[in-house]
Length: 246
Image (tube, rainbow, N blue to C red; front, side, top):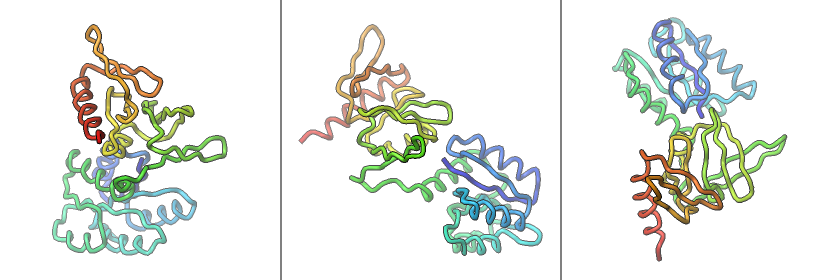
């Protein structure tokens, strides 16, 4: 999940932007700043203190230190956060993209357009693994870090702001949303069977229809498929296993 900073000298616009960002399940934390100098100080403090900052949603026309100047300063950080410009001035787009901005949004910001900007930020911050490469999820276990490979995961369950990964060796709780994990692993054959459950197609051994109920066997577990997802799950599993035949 993403940790971001929103910067705008217009308080209503800043509050609206922060509100929309907090509604997105890909966003873990939103910090706000009402001017460029404060934003720079906040970033130095956060990054210097070892706090992760993935992206900055940044207005351009601000008194004192404007957004473009702030972006140039941020570019000098050892590991700079990604930039998304949010502005009423479309004439600055070329300069923004020269500064390697992830996206450029025009005010007033629409929720669906902001969602696309978050998607681009997520893709730039957490690029998907290359085809054939097994993704790995780090899990903290009492002072130790265990690396759980994607191929070992049978299924994942949503647990509030966390996801529980089930494997042959046990289950592990990680801080991320199921929606984010689905986007990250959809190309690896992971299928949503319920609003709170994502399964690995490679580990599904049986799909059963009984009395209007649909269940599947994954690993040693039997899971129920929601009515909403049953047709899609069947079609995806057929395509997945047909594609794996020699």
